[in-house]
Image (cartoon, rainbow over all chains, first blue to last red; front, side, top):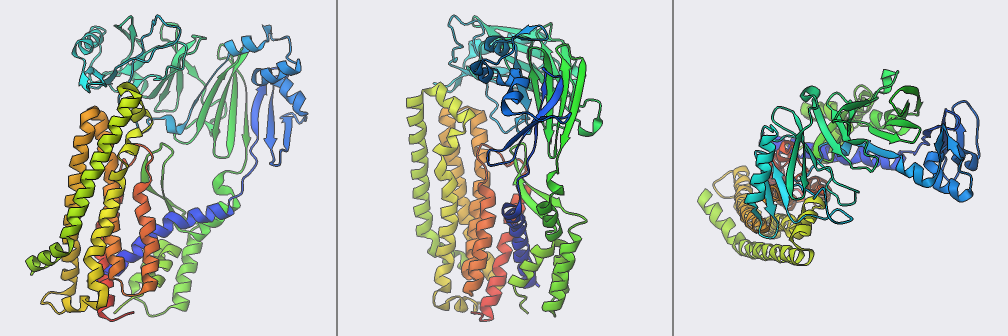
Length: 410
Length: 223
């Protein structure tokens, strides 16, 4: 009895290993890259344009109306992306929609951010640094302490690895005075000194109210932003930019994106779905990109098999949208064959950079592989314990490998 | 009977235990040295930034990652190679105890010793990282070591089972399986990436059962 159990444990371990590696090897051997078009919006002709790499340095340029362009023509359609090259060619247009074009003016009036799945609650150590926001120096100076923020705020001196009591109390008191209810929940900042200035941290408290915490001349400044606590925030991102239009952006649990504006912390919703609901943004599976250009703003949502682009005016008035699609991964030949062959696949990598054992079960395509495996077992290897058949029924080719390799011993 | 087996395994393992304990102390000393070196040359604040943002600590405690593997491998070899050399295992099968209980107790006792070494390493590391780093870093560093310890345990059980297997063909197949399974525990590149460990624990937990099949095949005289 125990010997049988022992054998099945070995078979199951073989199933685990095969399910982890075989489908992966299969993909490595047979997956083909497919050409995916990159779409963009030309403010010159007010039309969506694209370029498409075909490998070997071959690139098509065109617009969705069906015109094709040479590389030079294409660059001229997108002066806000290719201004540096255009300036070198001396082909940068004088103005578009009343906006005077120069490298400098474009750079000053453009801003870009993206939200990738791996940016949302990634594995991290909850220790933060707070810059001096009104520094006497030209650049931001790296501070010499760090802080933790949960049931209270505590500054820690790395040299002695101990709490700096006096500073901690001052900040704690400032936060309490602003109406902050400990413990803190989301703590969002931009901990780099490669930025023009510092806006500190956006922090949600126990009541889901959002506060901004900064350090000015060594003193704490904590402001209750008044942002709606009922937003169901998933993550806050902070990014200081000289345009000083928004402090950062908020991603909510229902996949909405809001900018936190400098104008009294008002929120501005960025469209995440457009007119067509089909390719609406889903933060767990897609990348969200937001471009601000001098004359308009682009939202680009990209996922497996599609890119959706929405164009709005500077005041967020809807202008146009376009979806470009191609064959998604699980509709490609290699992937379909894989799903017929293997009953399921085990993998450990998640888009959020955590490691957990997860199973993709290829129902009902996997019936083919399971059927073949069972047939092979019945035809070529008879007189087995019934449990062998059950294993193959459940785990297809993986189980077949297992029960054939590890012989049944009476 | 169990006491006698315990004594026998102790005889086989005692030098190994001592050597591994020595290596543990050396590894921890290495970690202290590396941590102090980096703090000295980077400065405490920058070092903290590297430790928090770039997982530098994982590099400085690299032996904590390797040592459980070495320990698992060494204990399995020390315990079961002498038994398999010259088919000495046959003598054990004449003892008034079933082969299954015998094998399971041997593996269980070996694992207890392995666990002792792991705990020694774990608490040593706790001490080492607490000196220079705040509680948050300590917690993340310690959580990062759990999969490594599971990986060391996996190697112990799997190598034991491979040594006990009498046929070389099977040993090679099992070797590939063991490699694939152990790799599961060493996939992290930053702190505390294994958020749900239960599936990984379960896989290790069933591994001791595998030795019985090998023992059974040995008894049947399969070559």
